[in-house]
Amino acid sequence: MLNIALPKGRLGDKVYEKFAAAGYECGLFHEPGRKLVMSCGDTGVSYFLVKPSDAAIYVERGAADIGVAGKDTLLECGCDVYELLDLGLGVCKVAVAGPVNYREDRSSTLRVATKYVNITKRYYASINREIEIIRLGGSIELAPLLGLSDVIVDIVETGATLKENGLEVFEEIMPISARLVANKASYKFNQKRIDALVAKLKGEAYDQN
Ligand code: PRP
View 1 (tube, rainbow, N blue to C red):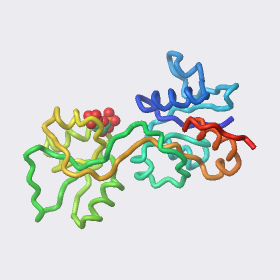
View 2: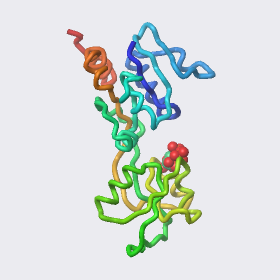
View 3: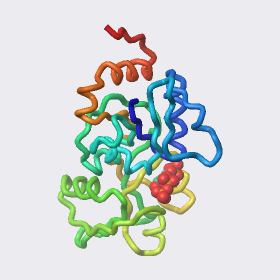
């Protein structure tokens, strides 16, 4: 069995549809009450559903052979995995955003709310800007509205959340999408099966020999 870590939620549903279309169907996936582990005997794969930001950690540590993680979470955790394929799903960007009429005072430390602490530190270090990080777990957009931070660094997909809250993008830090990743040792031992899966996800024929 190839163990596959999929992100729970919207992205996971889209990713699973892509795996199913490539021949890795698992009927159990759509059963109500969703089990966290689904073994799909005939296809030779077993799926786990994990928190999106945890997927790369399961793969890095070998609890999953392969998995799907956003480029944002890969950069944030710095996980030591092989990145095999850009799935072209979950396309968005990491950006600096803040109140529409915000004017930055460059003489004082910038207060930045984010769950992407490492990405944020690296970005501001690259432009030599002194910051104070306010680490939050979600609903980051609230921080500047309540005066908790000056700006935020967060994922922007449609931009609707920013717009509805009187915020706008100031800087785009990087584009993001979901990536198929593999544990390094698992890839070595299961290279043919994993390469076959990658080829099927790409819609290519794969020669097993
Ligand atoms: C993400 C992100 C933004 C929102 C952006 O939040 O943190 O809040 O999506 O999407 P949009 O540009 O299409 O409006 P998520 O739903 O993952 O929840 P979170 O607030 O817990 O991070």
